[in-house]
Image (tube, rainbow over all chains, first blue to last red):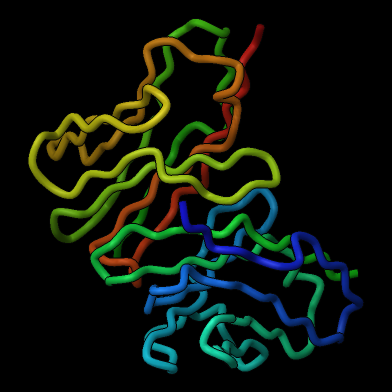
Length: 113
Length: 112
């Protein structure tokens, strides 16, 4: 069964550093999403992406965050200058059609020290 | 605004016992409702979903959930819990993926 792949599974970074979280969505999917989950808390929507542009973003997704689909296969989330409170599990999801159900990746655990 | 409440942060049941995880929602229209399971260090796996029709929905791994509009609830049930069911369970609600909201989760511990 096709999967959404996220790399790395765990990343540790120093506060203030830039990080890029990578996702490879399922190949014929068109809609892409990032969610995050701070340890012990609920899953929160960050951003949705379609047709090479952001279609919606939450309040969490401030100027420190950006997304990109650089080469037609990867979908990346960049955090420009990480803060301690960015430590969380970040999930990528993709859809073929908006009416479909999410396929989530297994997540990247980001630890900011 | 839509919201999801999972009143139980942590539930412990004995293996073989029945299970019910509660989920209440607030939504302006008939929502789409979901239950996801997350094993430690793993991603979110869809257990079941409700869009319309029969209010009792069957999912994977022997789980079922019942949509009760009058109670704004979508409780997850399993008649006999297995040790491998120990995980975090998330209820989610939304009309489309851009407004999907997750509950805070219920952690299930299974005693031998």
